Length: 254
Image 1 (cartoon, rainbow, N blue to C red):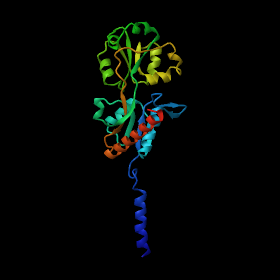
Image 2: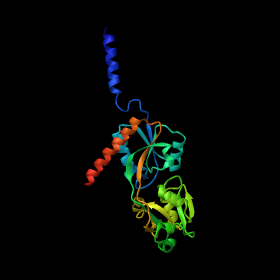
Image 3: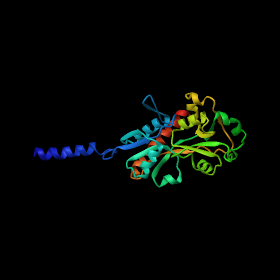
Image 4: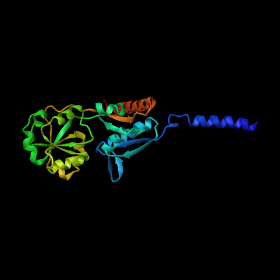
């Protein structure tokens, strides 16, 4: 009789302990690319405003995660190959990605891009009054990061540009150094990236930041997850984003 009483109690207790939202959920890999000040490594320590926010989102959503730094090309190759229990963050929503991933609610909104111009190209670039004019200049070289998007508008402008195109799968900060070394006349760069890099990179001391008419507005960034993630999991991620964004707005007084 004692056995019969203990067994139901044990199974009831186990059920209660394991019935939380993370029960039976596999560890989710959250991949991120280096892009200071959004996410980066400093002396081996993971830092960045979006990296910290992403950790808060998954913690709030009560999801077990493993954060791992990977190049952008590898991240999107993993999505293309059908990776499971796999997420990343800080990405634009563009049509070719929608068949590969599920998009969260808005995670972050960028300022408009700006131009980082090499020392030898400052006069030539500043002679143009608009972005559309600049992109017709066949004597200039535009540095472009492969495997990432600048947003639908800029991607289309780059595709039809008459500039010479210097493509690289490198990091934004490395492309900025290439501009500083006059290997490219200019590049598009996030204003937040530039604010971070300008005082840290000696090689950029003689470069010039410029704004021209016709630059598209800043875009929204999202958390993206593999197609096997359930609707309930995505709902929890979205609820966490909304809660954290609301807290952020309240703290900033908006």
